[in-house]
Length: 386
Image (cartoon, rainbow, N blue to C red; front, side, top):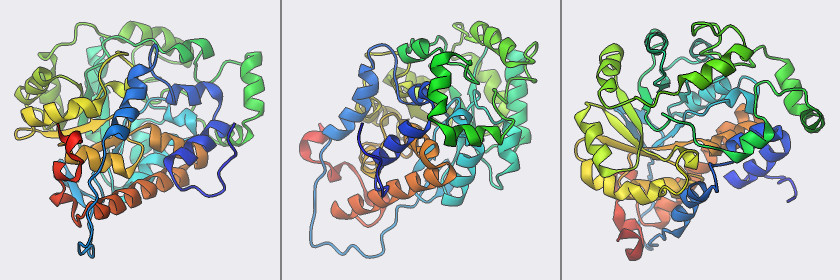
């Protein structure tokens, strides 16, 4: 195992530290994909294959990475993606991440499957965060989630479309993933080496799915949640269901999970304000193409009609620049900030954002640009633009 980094200079340093500090089942939940994990690996590899075009002797003073996401000014075009079980990577994880994102100047998206509830996150923030919605069979509960998000003043609703069925994630099955961890011998031995994590968890009462337990009908405990969850994936979800969601919500709507140009056009026709080019971090259909590979076609097809965002494989500010150059007007980071959270708590999330911002700023400058608004595909080497 590589030595623990003394100075955190990149997201990989945060990953190594998180691997040491987070219990195995929760680290593996973050750092894994479905089946052979080929799409998970492709998300990163296809970013790395894109080469940049270096320019010199350009006045690089007065640089700016500022942008807007759905009309909201942001320090850089990055949002913290909705990630389940964040509060098991670090105690009160969603609250810490939301607070860090707000202070840094980027959006935070809370997952339906979060440990901290909508109300918990609202209590520690002063500006609107976004809420991600899974469309479950219990439509009355879905409506109550939408209403709670409205009451909390959430600035956008992010509807995930690619979880009608659950992709098989071998590591989660082998680890017997539960929250909180079952007191098996293997888990207890692992937890004995994660004392920092254990002490932080002792200081919170938030150890189950806060948006669901005590809110969904018949879900009064973690044990009842497990059986409820298995029955709630809805294979009948269609584009027609978005009409009542949009009407109930009444605010800015983002559709997440788009990989195909025809689906992108349907997203436009649905009246959504933005879409997210996404393969669920390589956690659903293994063998699907990477998000960055699908991005240019989708941006070309619908980018004039809808704001195009993307997630999957973003591990650096260089990745953010490459995605922007290929048509994304926002990048969502999931694993990257979770590494920071697991490594150093709230300070780790902030450090992750600082690293990405510095990498974005310097890379933009090396490519001869001083404003993100002036960046286009010309910053990529010719072979990357094909």
